[in-house]
Image (cartoon, rainbow, N blue to C red; front, top):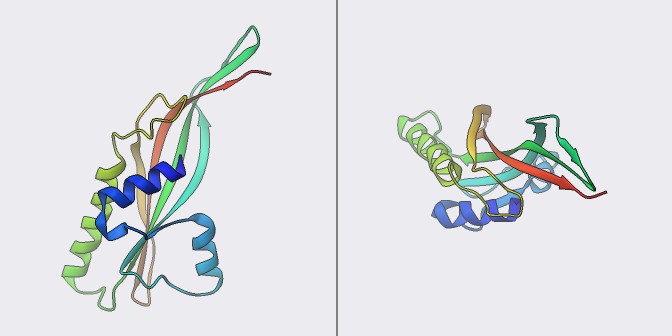
Length: 146
């Protein structure tokens, strides 16, 4: 699913082409006390699964509806983050990501829903860098054949 999301963001948002990474890449950047050199980059992180029901046991199978949540971490670099125009650019970038994913499905097996916005928040604004997290959830049906 993450590869499909990466492709979707890169095709829908030209500023993110070649600038969408994984949570592991973001962790390495943070651990080394670096910031991405691009004006804007995004990192995809799986945030969790939540049950929507208790599941159903049937002959030879078990299925359960779940919500899978993913985070899109936007890293926005700007030397002059205090200027109004930069905040407008950040707001536009956040909305571009929301428009790219909301209502869309990666068309994978067992995906029964489309992405919906689960929340968004400022993570950090320091040293000319703004980090903003946007969370999306999608409903899935997990089937297990023990």
